[in-house]
Amino acid sequence: MAVAISEIHFRIMNILFLSTGKSCRAQMAEGWARQLAGDRFTIQSAALEPKRSNRHAIGVMAEAGIDISGEESKLLSAEMLQKADVVVTLSGDADEQCPVLPKGTKKLHWPLSDPAQTTASKEPIMSRFRACRDEISERVVDLFQDLLRQSRRTATTKPPARKASRKTQRKTSTL
Image 1 (cartoon, helix red, strand yellow):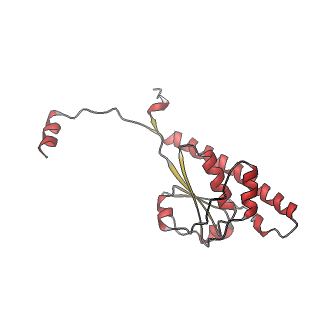
Image 2 (tube, rainbow, N blue to C red):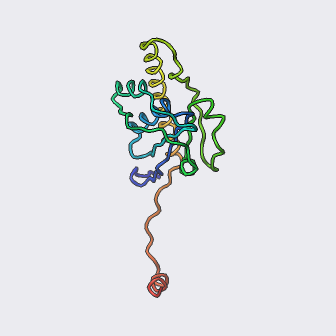
Image 3 (cartoon, helix red, strand yellow):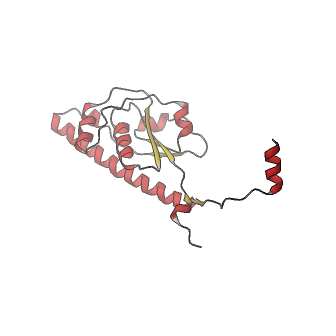
């Protein structure tokens, strides 16, 4: 039986990017994800130990046409974890220190090196940030493709609207 796309119900998924300081990797991931998400995903990011935004991360994302200058590092909260369908850890520390996730929440780890740890002249630093930005972009695209593929497999068709029986209508009208 063929099902029209309009009859398929896709649930909006909530993705949380988690890092240690959320000064560059999580902000870049959130920036890319917001740019690419469309209306199928809700995106958020958080840190275990929030730090100030990294100016190099802001700069390389601006080169890609994405403004993350208004992003602030947010401390991870229980509410964020409760809402998340997928948690993506972006550092070894975040992966190791990630709290226990609610049942059904998927956890992924992207072992990205921290470009902020580069101690060299400006150009090699910017090269490391660009490489990290580009790797995050590829991983975000792959993540969305995987999640959309999975949601299509588990999508349910909306059941046809049912008319209430006269008996049910009488009960409802007397309430």
